[in-house]
Image (cartoon, rainbow, N blue to C red; front, side):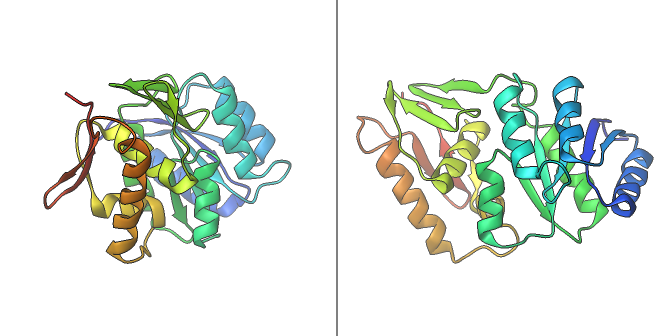
Length: 228
């Protein structure tokens, strides 16, 4: 059996919540439940949680606000998977901008949900401080900011998401398909779009400095490595 996790589900649809809880508990996970945003925020900040499953349209406090507040107030990195019927690119970007790690559009497969929970809970940053360093690059997940050699990097929300994805995987490469899935879900644009974003990211992260940190890994994707 796979490792069991403490999971917080914040969802106001009782039928959906019951199905998710029954399925995940049958897999051995420990479920905590909140039916509104205020209760969900309180649970996330007072319990030891491995993954938060967070609906967007919630009573008392919406999911974007809850996510942003968790990021602001928690002293550890708690993976957050948003569950929502909102499926536009703008909706997804808003979710990532508020601090979400992943995004699953309703209706979804419970098996896929379980797989994404496992992937999130096993990330190296689980329970780690918000800020970390890779060579001259400092990443602050909570502030959604990055500096290199003390110089602030001005990044759009999309470029920030790409940089964070590469930084959290460093020194391992991230496949092009995985970057596209994390950014655009199941409807990625053409490969030229990702190539253009990587080019823009390199202009900000690498071009003003002596050594490049963003590397292309042939037939795989991209890697962020400290300069030698």
